[in-house]
Structure formats: C-alpha cells, structure tokens
Length: 297
Ligand code: A2P
Image 1 (cartoon, rainbow, N blue to C red):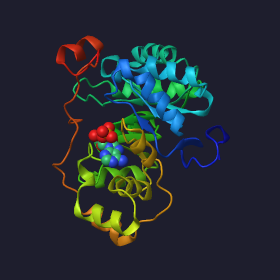
Image 2 (image 1 turned 30 degrees about the vertical axis):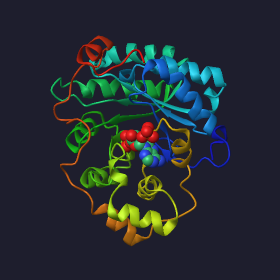
Image 3 (image 1 turned 90 degrees about the horizontal axis):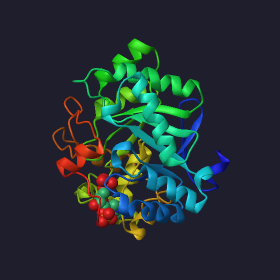
C-alpha cells in the first residue's frame, strides 16, 4: 500500500506498480474562478486523487489548492494533453507548462486527451509520452477516449501499451467491447461521467439495489463501477454528495444486481463526443469563442 495516501484510501495498481486511489475528484467544467476552492474542499473531505486537463483551464488553480493545503505529496494528480499540442516536440513543451501550472516536478499520470485521428499524429505523441515516463517525469502514462483501433495502432507502432484508458462509462453506455479489450491487454479503465451526468442513477435496477442495501442510487452506480475494476471520477459540487461518492465500501452488489445494471447498456446513450471525429484544438481562445468556457461567475 502506498503510504502517501494514508490508511483507508482504496487503490488500484496500474502500469509499473503505480497505485492510484480508486475514487478521483473530476474537475471538468469547474471553472477557473471556482476551481481552487472546489479542490481544497475535495482534499479536506479526503479525496487524494485529482483529475484535471489542460483543456479544463484549471491546472493553475489545482496547483494552488495543492500548495495551499500542503497536500501535493499525498495526492495523485492526473492531467491530459490538449488536442492542439499533439506531436513529439509539442507534447514535451506542453508537459513542461502543465508541470509549471500544477507546481509539480513529477506528474502521477499523463493522458492523451483525445486520439484526434483526423490529425493523425497520436502515435508520435505517444512516443513522447513513453520518453517522459522513461525519464521519470511521469509515473504512469495513458490515453483517454481511445477506441480499439487507436489502441491497436499505438501498441503495434511503438510496442508500448497504455497503463490507462480514461473513457466515458456509465450503466447506460459502458462500452463492453472496449472494456473487454482493455482488460485483455492490461489497460486500467477509468470511468469519466460515471453517473451519466447524473441521469443513470434513476433506473429501476439501480433504485432497487439502493433500497436493498440502504445506500443512495449514486453509490450503487459507483459500486457497480468498482466491482468492474474501474477507477471512477464522479463530479459533484455538493460536499454531502462528494462525501457519499467516496463511501463505497460497506456493501457489495450481487451477481444478479450487477447483471441487471449491465443490461442497461445502450450503444446510442453517449453523453460525450465522438472520438472518431472530435479534434477541436482546446486552446483557451477556441473554447471561449465556442462558449464552452466560463471565465467569470
Ligand atoms: P451536483 O454537482 O449538483 O452534485 P457525472 O460525474 O457522471 O458527470 O455526473 C455529475 C452529475 O451527477 C452532476 O450533475 C452532479 O450534481 C450529480 N451527482 C454527483 N454525485 C451525486 C450524488 N451522490 N447523488 C446525486 N447526484 C449526484
């Protein structure tokens, strides 16, 4: 057990013996003006895994929260490379900027945020990730939103399989084939939007299990993820929900409860973007222009 997270923080081993706390605090759409406070609240509640990205525009605020709470040494930090910085040299430069913004010399987990296959340079990008791990600047490397064809290609062309694939996964859209592929190749699955943006908690098998076990429907969904071996990144701005989303150990779903929740899968029920086509560059200017970023309350 990795002592830096303290007792009682469940973890999963990824890559070269790196421990990642099973429940992470996701910071997508936590805007710059509110991010430092939100991350400080999460750390105070006991979260020891913070998931950010260059494209979330809150790395500096995550870094400020880690510094203000003196929790940097006890916290697993993930960030992701923005689409516009793909390519070998651009990746190395961009990684340095993330380190500066986060105030860290070493990052626990660095991910390629999207494959952007229409730009066709994720393989070179991946080579830079391998270099960063070899040099000790990152403990683990991975990808996000990669489909089987993208995973196959980086493995075939570089010989290095990612430690992690962070993908959209929730009961109504859990990508069983991609999940099976990851399991077969030793790639840990991290579930983003684990509650389907909150909508998957109101479904009959989830509500039935919540009644049986005396827990909330959100806890049932997160426990379902845990029993599948996923790392989960639930998002909430309410401290009580943040607390309950970490409290998943006191009950276990039966095989039939798991199967009933599995059966909710619907390949059309995505709440995210299509990895085949999404390649927007994610710079601040682009995101403000598209109205997808809020810089003020
Ligand atoms: P809120 O921020 O108001 O708590 P996802 O992580 O799948 O994107 O889901 C996030 C959504 O789920 C948010 O709208 C969040 O609302 C809601 N949510 C998070 N945790 C819980 C919970 N324990 N119970 C009910 N809703 C939750």
